[in-house]
Image (tube, rainbow, N blue to C red; front, side, top):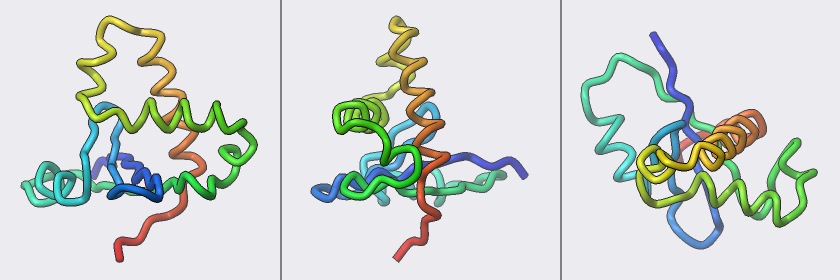
Amino acid sequence: MSKIQVIALNDDNHSKCYVTRGSYYHNMADFAKECLLKSHTCEYEVREVYICDPSGELATLTEDEFLYMFDLLAITYDPAQLFKDKPEQWKNREIAFDLFWKNGDEWRYA
């Protein structure tokens, strides 16, 4: 069974948003409706990044670097469509996704 990596972004102000490599979901209800509640043959693995307490390598970034990457992931439009004519921005989003995923905290829904 394939796994899809999901990052729950917690900005300590709004509902967590959920991002995959190519998608954005405004909140848990949207993520569940579009992914979890539909028939699927994959497993979703979720890690959380909390804006107020980044861990691992994320904690070594400057505030501006961290927020830039956070914002690249938390774009509320279809990221693939938004960056289709901006390959450098898409590459930066992929780098951010990998770094956030690698340093995200194992997530438990509560």
